[in-house]
Length: 287
Image 1 (cartoon, rainbow, N blue to C red):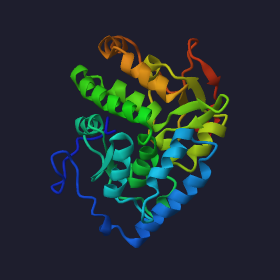
Image 2 (tube, rainbow, N blue to C red; image 1 turned 120 degrees about the vertical axis):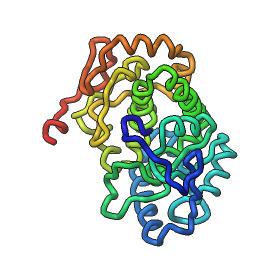
Image 3 (cartoon, helix red, strand yellow; image 1 turned 135 degrees about the vertical axis):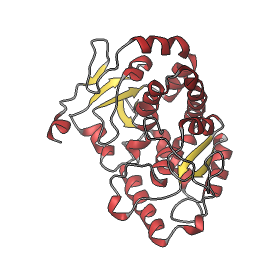
Image 4 (cartoon, rainbow, N blue to C red; image 1 turned 45 degrees about the vertical axis):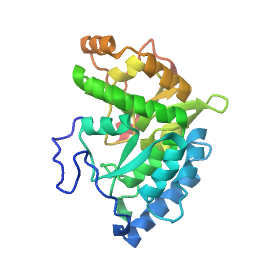
């Protein structure tokens, strides 16, 4: 999402919805090699760490050719599974454009990839983050419905001036969410974690961050940072419950309540929180 970024200007090559032709043939051999390296590294790391649904969804990325996925072929497989498709965009897009794509089951993916010397961190989401991180769960019917519902809710949030609050829900679920699975073990599912070699380990193994039970209103009050590992993660019980809670919530009075409440600093732990792990915050202090 683009919330909080400078005003974006649509490039001349982009359509009104900010999409561009993927032009798969324009990617170099080196760029395809970087994808293959990242894909192999993360695919080996995630079994036993990532949500079962994510690992199962990785099959949708096994296409006829190695390297960066061809969006036309990928979309054909994804559409058969859940009605979603992947469209190429030049980079970050405005919030209303982003929400409209999601509401219509289109996932906008950056049409570029990081360099070999940027394997572990890139500030702007590239095709690896967008496709490897997000697309496997879009093959899951429940999570696919959640993403559509989020897009529709995002469009409504513009009317209430509450996009910043709703962005926190996306951040702490779609990008950096944890889930309880396999006998109450914690697993990762957020795209920002599953596409990160370092945070895939940190989010589950480090004693530093808080890990708290998911609560919709609590999450939407909580600030976040975009430039390092998270200091707090929120844990859902299931994708079905996440979808149910967001679909059943009446967001108009929720936004009104949130406007009257103070934002919560990232490391805050409330008495009402379900504390799964109270973090030491040693990582951020050392940094």
